[in-house]
Length: 242
Image (cartoon, rainbow, N blue to C red; front, side, top):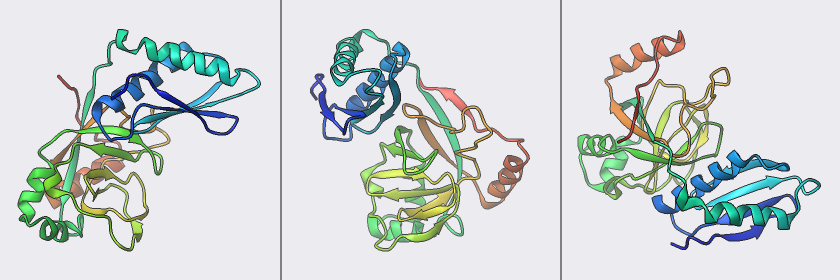
């Protein structure tokens, strides 16, 4: 991985900063670190910073900061990245009911990877997943670190409706739909936890750099938690990652 980023103009109001071409934690850590460092500097003219798996898009006002000035800001921040301590990571535990009405594709995933349903559940719930980026819709976390043993392709024809809280698999990624929407990921479970709430500070439950751990629950536990979530009587467990 190169520590010298590649800078690419994206029209006359955005700059893309690339750190590589792979989904890898060290690359993503540099992207998130650069975004945090630039954001803290509060330079005039910077409109929005959008981190992804391997790059950072910086939207800016060219009437306030020129392309050359912005490139200088980025190169200065990139040169100081190794001097800045990484922030402590959080682990957010997401209670999840697997299979049945909650995960209609679980059996198909198990058949595809030639494992039992219980083995797929144990494997999926057995790790901590880095939130590489947020996207697709508000509050949707793209999670990395899933075992390739349970990787499964997207659906050939996406569903027109996926329920809020659905937990899906697409290739070697897993993710959670924060609200009802179309979608083509293989659905293996569902959580009653709200991933996005416009009335909450902040609206998104998780952010890039956090980790997610799925905690299996029964159908009865799901419905009980769902009732508690609806009346504001439940908050997921959040802890610091060692």
